[in-house]
Image: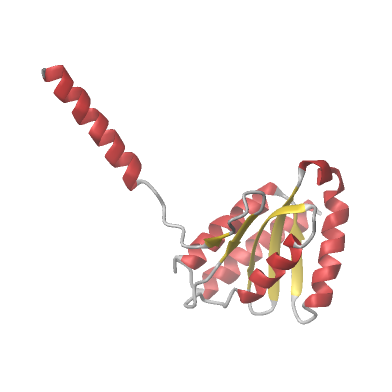
Length: 155
């Protein structure tokens, strides 16, 4: 009887710890399971992210793309995308095509784009922080510049 109580107590404690460890993610996600797209909807964000959302939607209009993350500052847009498995051999070519399309769509913004998974993960983290009001404008610019340097180094 005592062992049963101990096992139940440990199981309850484990469930409690696992349940409380969830991070909040208030971003809007698509209902399509084949597309990985999030939309930052925080009106109190340090910089309005509607430009990045529009750019992400433009990338998702391409049949090769199945995931996009991105942020923007007042004069720059930073995007990372994932392609379908069969298109992975053309990632570099697609980067160039997508960048020129986005430069036409946003002529007053400087565009940085990457298909690197590390950049994608970093942008995902930044999107969460922006959505949850954990970032001010100076931190956004600092993180943006850090990721921009990573993109330039891989080129």
